Image (cartoon, rainbow, N blue to C red; front, top):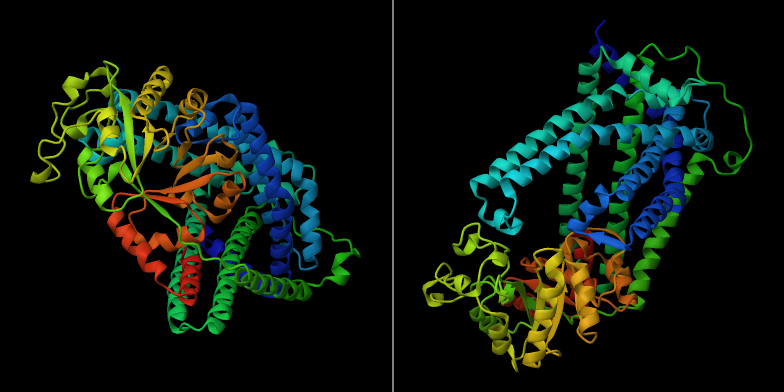
Amino acid sequence: MSVAHDIWAGVWWLTGRIKLRWKEVVSFAIAFRLVNWVLLAPLSAIILRSFLTRWGRASVGNFEVVSFLLSPTGLLAIIVVGAISLATLYLELAGLMRLLDNERVTWWQALTGPATHYPRLVWLGIRQLILYLLILTPFLLGIGALYFVLWRGRDLNGLLVLKPPVFWLGGALAGALLAVYSVIAGRLFLKWILALPIILFDSGVTVRQALARSSERTNQRLKEIAKAVGTWAVAQTLLTTAIVVLLKYFSAWVLQQSGSSLAWAVPVTAALLTLHGFALAGLSVIGTVSFAGLVLTLYRQSGLRREEPEPIQVRTGPRTLITAPRLIIGSLLTLIVLTIRGMHSSLDSLELQDQLQITAHRAGAANAPENSVAALRRAIIDRADWAEIDVQRTKDDAIIVLHDTDLARVGGGKRQVGQTTLQEIQQFDIGKLQGPEFAGERIPTFDAFLEAARNQPIGLTVELKPHGKDDEEPLTRLAIAAIRRAGMLDQCRLCSQSYESLMIARRLEPGLKVGWIGANALGDLTKLNVDFLMLKTDLCTEQLVERATLQGMAVHAWTVNDPGWIPRLLDREVENVITDDPVLIRERLDEIRRLDTVDRLILRARSALLD
């Protein structure tokens, strides 16, 4: 009989077990998620925060993430936090395997029994992560070498925008290296797939022995195991995608049919939120239960499985008071009550704010040459509240307004701004590509830009773009000196991806507001010593904005070119949006301000459901 036939026979066995034990399985899933939420997830967060503190920062983001992760402290954080996360997953899988393996096991016994294995599960995670990282090292070195050979000295933004042949070559080679690593790591994952049930069901087995036994038993079956795991992954992905898409369209349709009555809007919204919560939780449970069953099936067919199920001692305790049906019904009722209470609390404290400032990104890149004086004039006409610009230092210590660190996008090839004089830079015409009406527009100096903005109804958000550590203090000093000369300290604020530049600015001009720019982050951004956070839109969550507000920080979202984001950002109380097209965003903002309270409430519900 073929291995494939055995696996499909195991699938039918598993389907019968789940049908028989679904109440206990659902009860265990609910209880385990509560334990994870209260205890295990906060433990990982506390440990990560302690590693960040030891590294010297409350939060890191952008390119600093790479520096942190490649440092000894960061690597240790990956191993420890990753091992705890893996062990937590293993703990849940172990409980489910016990439930499916032995019909005498209760949800409470499945929850508490595998806890005795937790130290070994953590050690299992550590051993696996270390080996994965060791194998990854030469591939990362190879990618680093590609960057050094192909992209060194080139501005990453320019590469992403222009996409020259060297960009595709480097991306293809790096992708090939990662693909090879994925194959090697995937093969290891399949070879170790039986280690967890071996630790769970075979008494006295060490982690090392479990990994060795798993490798031995899977060695001749890798192809069939890979097909089984691949089929599970595809099925779970298709199911999740289908449910999410159906929920999205169903929610939009229901909200449209509910009309403008406030009496209908609240219960309909609460019902949809509850439906979404149950659906997503159910998908998570289905995925975990089906994978646990798949691994258990592979273990039973490996020749390692003993004939009799493990003996179970009859215990008293929560099982006598909290049966599976009671736990399920109680959890459902609690979730519904909390949802309704949350909706009523929202109504009681309903304050639909619509005070949102608009910043023209690169002074308004959609309607004029970016970072140009012409763009500034257009931003003023378009009623932008602020203009965001980028400043850099040239070879001869001039401060210019330009985004990229090289001159590729303005026709200067790979020449670096820091190695080029102001006279050479201003030879390039940055307007002719935008349109004949902008022909002759040059890269402006910061002084010229300040002069154009002075006494105008617009503020300047000035991004400092140092060319390296040695450039942080000179650039910051020259930029602040220019602002002082123009008498525009109250009309300007500074921002940067370089946290050190912002701290230098704090020291040189304490009254000047500074903001940190982030596209991704680890840790708590609200612990940074800044006045505002300029974050990629998907980082501007309601929770982060609330924490920032408590710390006296404003949150600015970038780059918002889709007006559909405006209702969500308004509800999250983001202070400012950075956009290439101030006119488009202003039109949507004015449209929202004309809505009545009921329409705004429905709009808020739609935003929450469709996020």
